[in-house]
Image 1 (spheres, helix red, strand yellow):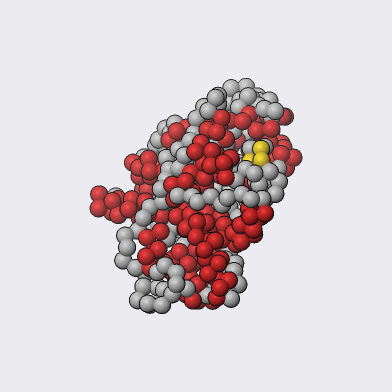
Image 2 (cartoon, one colour):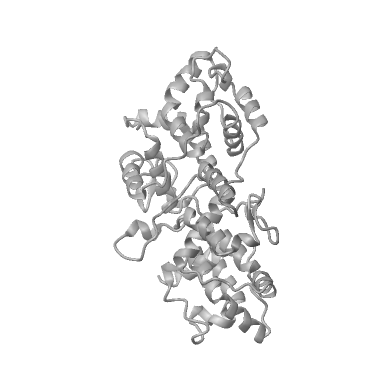
Length: 401
């Protein structure tokens, strides 16, 4: 990739990168770090590794890179989380190794940190495709009566701010902060105009943001990330814990955040902030709780904390994971993951360390030998469908209990 193309790519990635969490760490006193497993790496470094280690020779990201293998950010292929990335890597590993062998390409050695950064990059690249439709977004603003109050650039009428000036904040994190902070005054203004509070779907938020990116001439702003999960935890305990439960602590008035999210994207979270704002405000008034105002950086910290406690992550099923293990892993690694010698280690000792990054790192560095052994014994390479990797990881983690 020539320097100009690479520079253009990084500008594009930087503008679209919504969540970067740099909170990985060893087991020990850094408690919150051990919880963080959704995006533990540095996607900028992962992008450099992707091209410097030769991945971009075969794979493209949004059309930039090789054409021999799949574009890892093509529309419709965005992974929902790192477990999905690990499952996809696992399924396609044999074909990848055989293609590299045929082409005379030696697989580079990758440390766990390298794999963590690469996976963070791939996840971020997938989010480049979480794009809406500008035409639909403009229609949503009309149908939801947003344009009754908000002008759009050239229009002079409206009691609300010109949304063309908000085009610089057209990403879900900055949008979440704006919606949260301004919702009470918007609610009052809408009541005065006799306008019912409209609900927004995840897709409609994406469409609105896509439209806002096409209007106005204010330079786009990046989300104020990486966020600080510890500060996010402090904010949560200060402003949210009275009603919501997280990490086993908190109230039971609002949804239990330990149970995970119904929608697992940032645009879905922005929609949820908007849709539930009137009800939350009413409940806060009843409890005589002051509604907090959050800066954009604080919203980033709070969302980073939600990622760290796996709020956005699907919860695996231990029982299902046990069956997946016995049918696809137990032949080599033994019943109950007790291991069978050096080539198939005891997996129980890893316990809580098992994650998508852990499995992807093991796959990359030890997978070729595992594949050879499987062929020698006439065993099929295990494949994982849908979200089975979540269940397998949940089972392997449970062995540490």
